[in-house]
Each structure stands twice: as structure tokens, then as C-alpha cells.
Amino acid sequence: MPRVFTIYMTFQQLKYAICIAEEGKISLAAKKLFVSQPSLTQAVRELEDELNITIFNRTNRGVELTPEGEEFLSYARQVTDQMNLLEEKYIGAKKRKRDFCISSQHYSFAVDAFINLIKEVGAEEYDFRMRETQTYEIIEDVAAMRSETGVLYLNDFNRAVILKVLKEHDLKFVPIITAAPHVFVAKNHPLADKKRVSLEELAPYPFLTFEQGEHNSFYFSEEILSLHDAAKNIRVRDRATLFNCLVGLNGYTLSSGIINGELNWNNIVAIPLAVDDYMEIGYVVRNNTVLSSLAERYIELLKEYAASDAVQK
Image 1 (cartoon, rainbow, N blue to C red):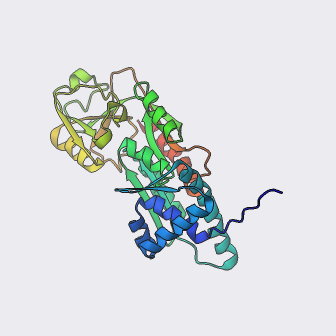
Image 2 (cartoon, rainbow, N blue to C red):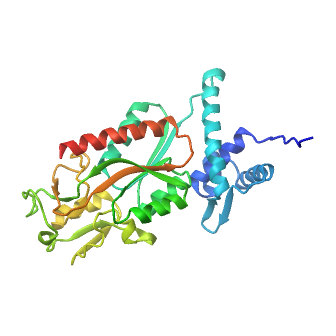
Image 3 (cartoon, rainbow, N blue to C red):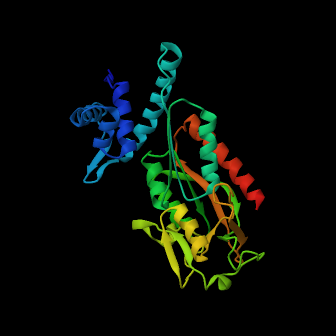
């Protein structure tokens, strides 16, 4: 006679595990959940014992999801989403705070989509996060479920390496749009009126790039032509600093040419770069996972704004 297993996991335990994965540290999750750290640790241990799996590996920096933990959390999120909907509809529970996180390279259309998603939700309470961050962190965020999706680009130079890393993290890349490389400069830059710019013409000016931290490999560079050997280099961490340096130092950066004047200031222009290359921009998601309705709508908006902003240029 087959052995029968009875599962006694609770809705609360599932919520605890999800929160720990999102925060990356039990102490931060305990603070957010308003429970003691020992109680939270015990609840997760009981869940792991019951399921006979290890959901988290404990490290000096916090916790990391194991492969089996990542799979478990993908199912747990589906359960908690459905339970919240049932509570709202049939028990009259207060509508829960809408929660969504996206990680992205620095693209204005990704911000456009994020802003309009929030406007569409129109909830009285929400917790939306957008992480404009380093390329490898985007991959880690989605793999660890801190973000439901991430936005980055591929081309012939980085494709093999990025796809290999995505496969190792059980992620897939879905293309949205293919764009020609452009140069971003200030409107008063000496080259701003040119119809097309070469790398040789850019040589006297500072080249601005987004710093990639521990994974500062050419393959993880956010700027196309990462092997481009400029005499003057400035590395920054955020969009505002980069645009200030473009204006204040007659600098330049290389990107897709998909630009929104309202978000990127009206004194920045995009000029086609005289090279034979491309940027295939898309989003990354976990394999075999069901996206939330917010993530699905964000991706729809992402496609819309990428296309509309590209047409303007």
C-alpha cells in the first residue's frame, strides 16, 4: 500500500519564505513582517523539515535561495496570489498592498512603462520598486525572485556569455526590439548637429559608462562596443550623474538611441553611430514560472514604449 504524506504547511509560512527571498536577509524580513527573527527562522526550518528540502542557504551576507528553493518559491507565489484574491473577494479582507519589482539597465522606456503601470494600478496602497542596476545584479535579482523580470540587451559580442549565465540561473531572454547603436551627447556638444558620428570623431571627448562592480567584465557592460579604447573614461553608477557629466564635460555615452526627452532632459540628443552593430533589447524571466498580472502588464507596456520611443528617433 503506498505511503500517504500529509502536508501541514500554512499560508503564513509561504508568505514568510517569500518575504525572506525578497529581502535577502532574515533580519530585514522579520522587520518587514513585524515578527521576531527567531520566530521567523523557526517557521522556515519547520517548513523545510516538512517538505524535506533546503529552501535557503545561510551565508555571512544573508540568505540565498537554493535551486530547489527557487522552484518551491515559484509555486508558493502562485498560491499566495490566489489566496489573496480569494480573501479579498469572499471574506471581505482589505485589499492587499500591490507589490512589484523590476530590475533594468538604464533605459528611459523601461521607466516609462514602470510609471504608467503604477498609474494604471491606481491603488491607494502599493510597494513598487525599480532597480536600475548593474547587468549581473539584474540576473541575480530575477533568479532570486527579488524582481519578477529584468531588462537588458544582447549583441553578437556578449550574447554567448550572457545566455550562458542566464541558463545557469534558469532564466530565459525574450527580445523586444532591435536598435542601432547611437551616441548620446548634450545639445550644445560640438558634434550635436551631425547626422552620423564615428568613433574617431568622439576620441577627444570623455566616454561615460555605467560601472559594473564586481562583474566589471566587458561582456556585462551596459554600453555597446565595450572594447572601445577611449583615452578619457568616466564611470558612474546612476543616470542623473551620467547626464550631468554629458552636459558639463562635453562627454558622450553609447546606447540604443531609444530616448524620452521628458525623462532624459530635453538637452540630450541621440546621434547614429557609424558602426555595423546592433542592440537586441529584451526582458529576462525565470523558466517555467507563472508571471503575476502586474508583470504581464509591465511587459506589454515595455513593448509599447520601446516601439514608440524608437519611432521618435
